[in-house]
Amino acid sequence: MRRFLSIVLLLLATCGALQGQGKYSNEFLSLGLGARGLGLSNTMCALADDVTAAYWNPAGLTRMDKRYQLALMHAEYFAGIAKYDYGGLAYKIDSNQSVAFSYIRFGVDNIMNTTQLIDDQGNVDYDRITYFSAADNAFLLSYAYAFPQVPGLSVGANAKIIHRKIGQFARSWGFGMDFGLQFNRKGWQAGLLLRDGTSTFNAWRFSLSEDVIAVFEETGNEIPENDLELTVPALLLGGAKTVHFGKGFHGTFALGLDCTFDGKRNSLVKSKFINIDPHFGMEFDYKRIVALRAGIGNFQSEPDFDGNKKTTLQVNFGIGVNIKNVVSIDYAFTDLGNLSIAQYSHIVSLKVAIDKFKK
Picture 1 (cartoon, rainbow, N blue to C red):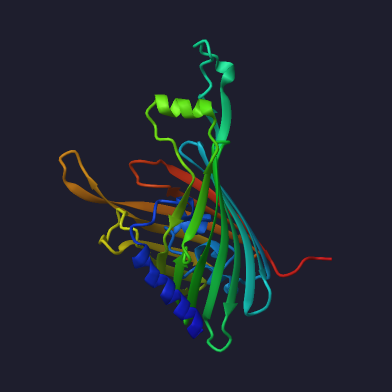
Picture 2: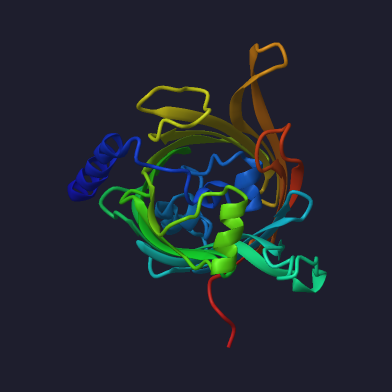
């Protein structure tokens, strides 16, 4: 345990050293995942206790109530232009250990390639238009361990492989790790996730034909070169409290703090070293059968037409239905970004949990 905490603190200390080197890379892994988490405005660092914990906080995998869990999600943003998909499998080895595999894809398909639209004679030929996809893919392998000596304490880690592709023009492979911790006792829950704790490195390789390079030069665009993209660590903190109202009614209230160290975020708390983005969520359920959810987050400081700054926020809503503690269907009404930029989207996710397969 001491060794794990020492590693976490050492990796956190590297955030300051890496400050200024990070870029906005792999941002698709910061969107959130699963309709329950999105409805609660991503306040899942402390709450995650099922297969989706592999994304929110791998330490939560030890709290799964069934041995096998499968989860699926499909979402569309910007009027269906962008597709966001997720699939996850989790297996509880014993009372102390769990593993999971997750796949996440965010992509825009059927993008027109017009670089060959005009032939050698200067004629416009629409038959020369081709199509390509720009897609980000992530593969997560997760492991979690609960300490029997300290009830309620668990740790976990993700090893993730990133593959990003822009048609036949560019692609990259990357690797990184996340480290998480959870503690639960008497209705109180706390969580910590060091996302990209090792930093995540994406090695880009570009394959541009001479014709494409000529188009870049004629239009005054910079010709990209092979490069290494770095995602610096981010620290996610969470806390939650579950209250029993009696007669099967429960309420859960959660807080999340996303701490970044790249110095480039328009968050509620800003400084040269650290930016903090808070978000809040609450959930009310009846006998774990049906649940109503709401959350607020994405606090932004925006200037108006007069140059005066104002603070805006994003409100999310959701509902969930649990059928015989086997099938869970969740819905969220949420927004990818700021209210005034991206339209709200309908998110639906499905989870199946069983203890054993019938012969």
